[in-house]
Length: 197
Image 1: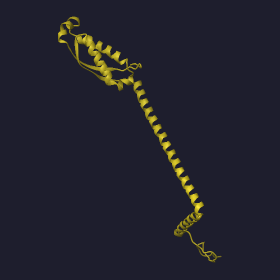
Image 2 (image 1 turned 90 degrees about the horizontal axis):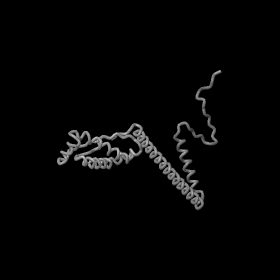
Image 3 (image 1 turned 30 degrees about the vertical axis):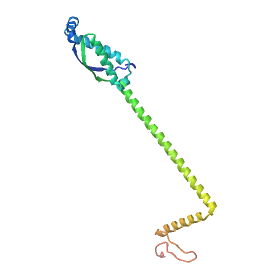
Image 4 (image 1 turned 60 degrees about the horizontal axis):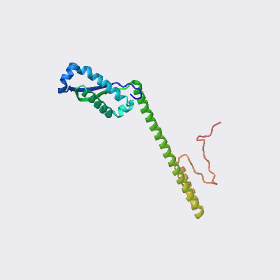
C-alpha cells in the first residue's frame, strides 16, 4: 500500500476468449492462455492500484478500489483478446501489526470520547452549582430585604416553629422526663432498695 503495509488480496475473475480473437490467442499464447496471461495481468494491476491507497482507505473505499481494479484488468485483458465477465475482491486481510494498530486507534478514540463526556458532565455540574449558588444568593437577598422591610418577625416565627418541633420530638421520646421548675421531687434513680448494713 501507499503507507508500506502488506495487504494480501484475493480476486475472482470470470472470463472467456473473444470469438474473433481465438486464432490469435491459440497461435500466440497457446491453449493455456488463461494461466499464462491472467495471473500476471491481475498482479500487475492490483499492485499498481493498491499502491495508490493507504491501508486504512482500502477498507473505507473498497468499492472504488474494486472498480478501479476491474476496469484496469478488463482493459489489459482486451489487449490479449480475453473478455472479463466479472471481477471481484473476495478476500482482503491485513498484517497482525496493522490490525493491532487499528484496534489501538479505536480504543484511543473510545477513550477520547469517554474523556470528552466526563469533561462535559463536569461542566454541566459546574453550571448547575453556579445556578444553585445564584438561587441561594437571591433567596438570601430576598430574606434580608424582607427583614429590613418587616423587621425580625420572620426569624421569631421560624424560632417558634423550631422550638415546637423540638418539644414535640422530646415529648414522644420515652427516655425524657419533664420536671417543672421549683418543685421538690424525690426520684429513685438507682432503681433498687437501700443497702443493708
